[in-house]
Every structure is written in C-alpha cells, then in structure tokens.
Image 1 (tube, rainbow, N blue to C red):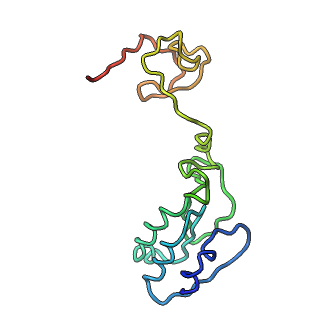
Image 2: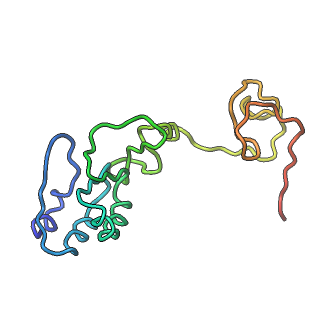
Image 3: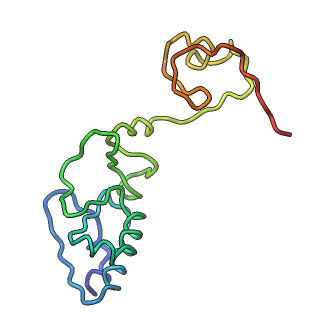
Length: 158
C-alpha cells in the first residue's frame, strides 16, 4: 500500500489489458487509495452486497472520481443506451459534464443560448412560434412539434 500511495504514476488510468494489485491490511488504506485517484472512466468493485454496505463511504469517494461504477463485472465495451455514461472527471475526459457514449452524448456539442424578449420574426427558425422546421422542442415543460397557438408573454419579476 505504501508504494501505491507514494507513487502517483501507479494510480494513473491505463488503457488495455493490465492489472495492478494493491495489498492492504486496514479498511482506511482502501479509502486513502481511492482518495488519491484522479479522474478515471471507470472503477470496479469486486465483493459482496455486504461489502457494498460496509464500504458505502468508498462508493461515495469513487462517485467523485469516475464516470461509471461497476460491481462484480469488467469495464469492457459500452452500450449506446439511455443509461450509459462513458466519461468521468478530468483527466479521464476534458469536460466531465457530459458523456462520449449514449444518447446524452449530443450535449458535448451543445451550448445553450437564450433569446429573451425577441420578436418571433427575429428568432432562429427552430424557435419560431409556428415551428416551420417541425422540430421537437420543449414548450412549457412538454415535448412537442406543434406550433405555439398564442404569442407568449414574458413574465418578468421586478
């Protein structure tokens, strides 16, 4: 354990088949090792359900260090699905606010812009009340392709 804690290179993420075995004799050693980690794509825990309960603080630490937690499995491949996240804190990814795989990956390429108080004719086509492009958009918390019937009123609290 001392070698691991004293050599930061040992905690760097490695891509490809490799194994690093760190022996410990105290529960606190495992927590200390987890605290030293930088951002990684995944962390795997092999154990029992009782181990998950006994080491819930380890999971809390790892949640801040990785993008995907795996229990009794191996981080091989990713599935493009709504639940998949493949990213993590820096340096595993350059921006940990999104994922590189899964349906949420599109948000890596988005930058929200708000058009407040603009007349309809000055809005981008996607935002015009009559929705000339027929795109899906959220209106009053609901996804719709319908045109907005009545002009919206801007409520500004003073």
